[in-house]
Amino acid sequence: MGVTEQLAAVPILDHFPPEQLALLAQATSLVRFPGGATVIKEGDASLDAYVVHRGRMLIKRETSYGTFELARLSEGDLFGETSFVDQAPRSGDAVTEHAVVVFLLDQAALGPLAQQ
Image 1 (cartoon, rainbow, N blue to C red):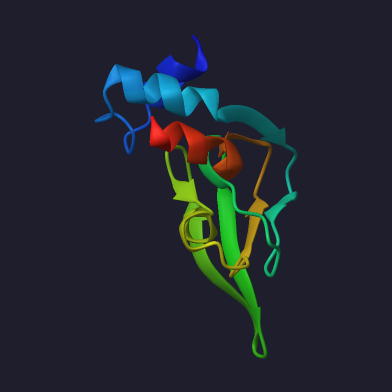
Image 2: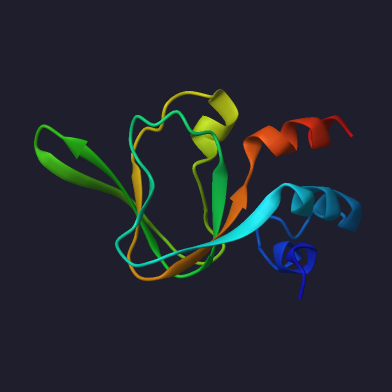
């Protein structure tokens, strides 16, 4: 199954028409991370967004009181979208709980495609 078909199976994207999914697939790649890997680090300037394809993620933030868990994500969940949209530094860490496969939505590649 190709990336376009896999994206069509993601609930937050299943309303996209096939033409839009094909464009989105051009700016999307599947990336694997081992358990315990930091995908996003708080304060980073990266702008990509992600959708969990397989596995689970933990979104957390360090505070003066310790680590605060913001969310636990699983298949189909979107993360990193805030920086993707507002282009501000990352507001928390995204860490894999176990080995994870994510769709990486490349912000730089999506800009020109959005014009289409």
